[in-house]
Length: 99
Image 1 (tube, helix red, strand yellow):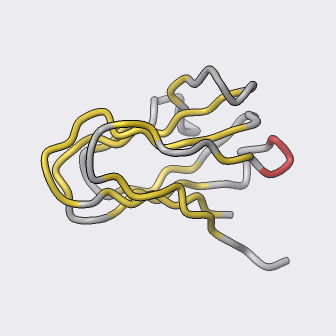
Image 2 (tube, rainbow, N blue to C red):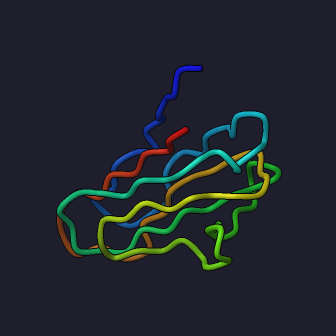
């Protein structure tokens, strides 16, 4: 099976990106990669209805939020996922969902 990645979008200011469908509503085989040269905070959020989002937690139970490039392994289920830049000073914050 071929692995793929889906761009969650780049942030150059605060705010949430577009919500993307989660394949099979299963986060267990997915990771999120946050990268770039930036000064800001990126969080990853999930939803079961595509409208109401909450911070997504990594496999260790910690909410996914970072001020530096990082990769997080996901678990659980959701119908939608998005990135949300909650603080921003400079640069471009990239985020990719990886299988």
